[in-house]
Length: 348
Image 1 (tube, one colour):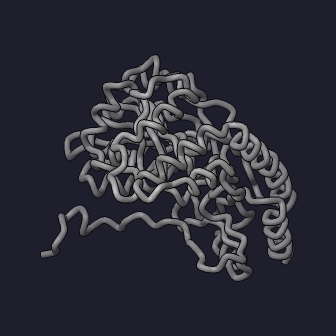
Image 2 (cartoon, helix red, strand yellow):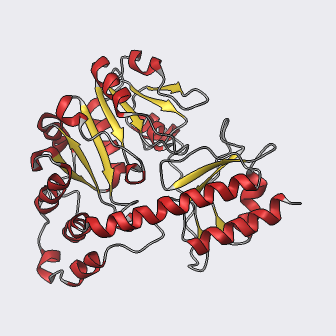
């Protein structure tokens, strides 16, 4: 007999992207922003007082809630601070799901969802996307207590229209969590749905567009009833005092944020065309990465050869994904190194 619950003993656990120890690498495997955070974040860090370490932080992160509410046109009571978007996913499943209340989501998608379902001992209903990654109609008929749609989706970079997700929210009886971790790089988002539907939670993170993956800060946008329910299952002090200060500084600097996002979107277009020119199939992406399909068979050899040159991209040896690579959009120099290496590999 093991020490842990059976579902924990049997769970494989989530495998994060490889984090190389060296810094002189081309790291395009975990969708980090290649540019530094706002200078105002660095300034806020320098202004942190020792007293902020001695005392517990504000349990609700009021300063950030007020700043985010202003950005999104909602009230502070509609914002909940989280230790990265992943904590919000765990909180939502903990609050909504159990062995009688399933989770549903379309696949392929973020591979943390089934891991969390396993750990929380709830059924995971996986509804396949079609070849164009349209929202599956069957998703509305699962009877799930919680439905998650990653939009833009990872790892495909595809985007579903807000009107379609509004229809899904109206049709289901449970909660719809729209994971907008990559929405900073897309043409539209679903924040407006929070005002129209009492069962919608929007997930946001500062890891991508705001260059703060190392800070671990995300947040929920939802009506007060859902926020109040999530508060019941969150850790007492789930975000620390320094993170609150730095996240607030970041989200207030919208000019810097937009400038970085536009640089990444422009580089994404160039990278997509270059990869297509090498014979890879690359659909339009609405995120800060591209999803590239190789010509023949498995993408594993290309992944390994790139890693041998200290160029890291993401690969999954799973059905439907084994012939594809997910490549984060880097700086111009990083992207050029990737393309040069790929050109040599595919020309053999």
